[in-house]
Length: 142
Image (cartoon, rainbow, N blue to C red; front, side, top):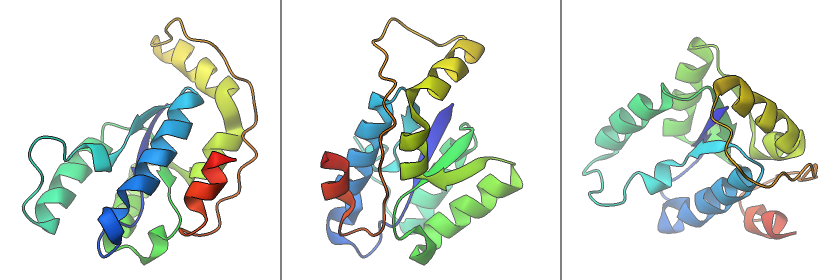
């Protein structure tokens, strides 16, 4: 399963990059392949919000599900990403949902997609509830 991270960026300190990066790290540790829009700016950042949205929607269509960050319902870009994802019949859940779902389902999916490599397997449940953007990093560090 290839997850696209969706959440608020505009108007937040450092464009919320620390929260995006922390979520991507935790999801990858559970075995998910993750597209993190905060990583897409490496090299040459977008010049406008619209340019970023165009790029992000192109990348989003190559994924199979969305993992939402706290505050996504207040983000114009995230709302558009979720709208497109639902129109494409993607699963849309919180980051916490995918972390609780755990590695077992990611391993089965990777086998089905033929992309399983030689990695150690963590069958932990994650046990994470994400409530708001302020608590996000503290919860991920538990």
